[in-house]
Image 1 (cartoon, rainbow, N blue to C red):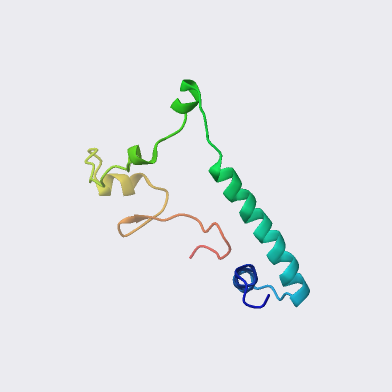
Image 2: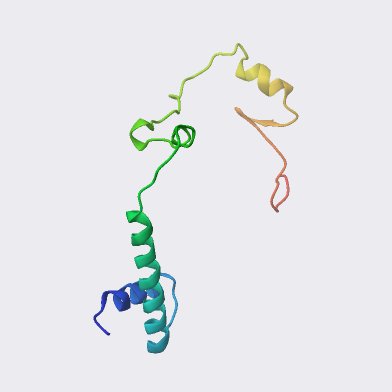
Length: 106
């Protein structure tokens, strides 16, 4: 069983998960993993029949697209100096805030 695909998969998964498995554990997990993968293959072969309503709720992968917008500078009419003048604390061109995680204000 040392060169079987299930054994190889278990070794690789154990390495990635930083687990040290005995040979008995590798054999057991190899059989269990193989059974799970066989079951997934069986499910994948099953014909799927959806009603029109159900089919409408499934997003076809070919219609997915990026909906993020491009970055753009927005001029909302507020000048930096005016904004900083209204801030409780400012340093150069930035609003200064109290430390949230540890440390103290200067």
